[in-house]
Length: 196
Length: 220
Image 1 (cartoon, rainbow over the protein chains, first blue to last red):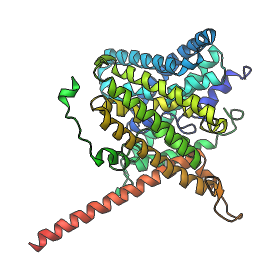
Image 2: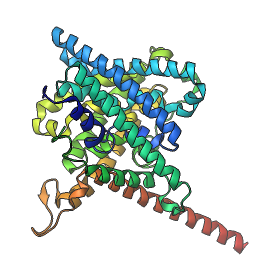
Image 3: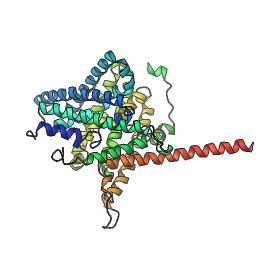
Image 4: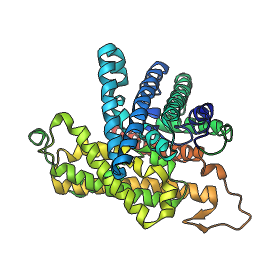
């Protein structure tokens, strides 16, 4: 596993095992903030940043817990670190871009309960990635998340102009769209060298 | 503090039933979608996940409700998360002890119960304001509603995608399974189809109600 080249790790996390469309992580923001392309882009970047910070922190914590033989505390520590990282991003965004802060709304603090981020920390632990590999993995996951969010936002902006039967408006339509996107992404299976 | 501001709910059947139907966490509130889509490729996984989530939901809601006067408002979210993570760790080790096979099938999604918004949502919106017994009944209802939703997806996906129910074959050997249903896209499609069905039922009910009031006005 250690020999895995960095480019493959990136490709695997971003496309082949896309966090949203193949692993079902982070569905809530995926459906919630994919209404407009601009918001989707900002949300993607915020998530990417939190992913990088928490991935680095999770690597450190895992090492410390391993030394102290306290692995059963891993989950609690991870989630605490993620919550603080989100708090950091929240303060940063609020200070430098109040407009963005308003448009992200409740979904900014909810990054804490975005399973993509906790999932990332847990997966990198299971896969025993070293520090650099972990960071690349986080970068790929964040890029994949942003990509899925942007694709969805683009589709939904077009859809707003189309005539949709009233039965299928709202979440049902979004889920069907997500299903189609997911089907399309299945075409990449096998590209990154097996299961990730 | 908050106790003075929010009226305390009286215990009624509705306290429980609301979670099952009217405020169903998955179909109505669209919360906690990740495990709903990810582990419902078989019915058994769906049931196990539903029960595990219900356990965490009920226990953490009870503890939050017990501690509601002592948790400072500023750090409440962090405290709730820590409480939830503690119970998830318990469930994680319990499932590992009960069945390694199940543990492998559910994978990281047991630990990801921490990030399930249904649980945090309950803690914030209900348990932190209401008394112990109503919290217990309400979270039990929510857990049952969540399990029901998982079951609704799991059975459809297993029957269509694998031709079995709980591992028992349902059709003759020449049945061609609809494999895409167990794969990721199937999850999205089945959940979308359920939502379509509920939308259709709701619209039909509204139309009927409008018609009957219209007829009443006409008769007058």
